[in-house]
Length: 199
Image 1: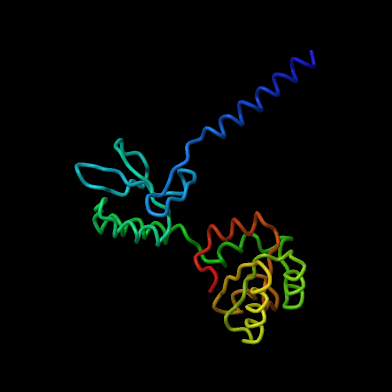
Image 2 (image 1 turned 60 degrees about the vertical axis):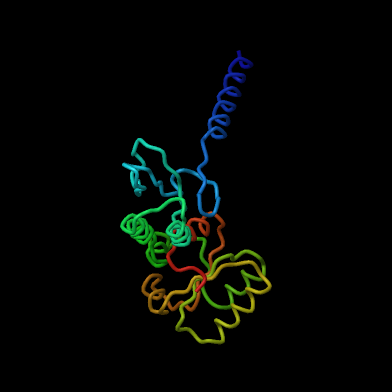
């Protein structure tokens, strides 16, 4: 009896893996990057014109473009697909709407265990290869920013700048010069949502 149940469980796992493998990937016509449908804008042909299919419901041939300013700009210069300026503006507005500031992203996570606070602790975390993302205010001492820029040459991590130290103090309710983040999933999530990356 256990063997039958074991086989059924194994079959279910295989079915699930097959379904995940068979999910269709889309490709950006500008940069050729592949990914899930939700990672792209869809452009559809309607009455001889190309339109931004925000809801992805237009029953017509279409293609996909990354949700980035760079790819939308490249699309605007594409000679094969002549898209009206209003459609391009709608895509750019959607990009702006979907992006958030780093402070907005950090608010729900402010009590997270994935943060390191302070210059020395963050430098130590970077050198040990644990801290992979830094949040640095532009108004801290220039020597600290220079020190982190030098560290970046030897260690693999990203830097996101905020304008004022006061923003971090208000968020974390403590005197903060720099915030280090060390969980890979958290960092990936932040980088996919943040508006201002790497200065």
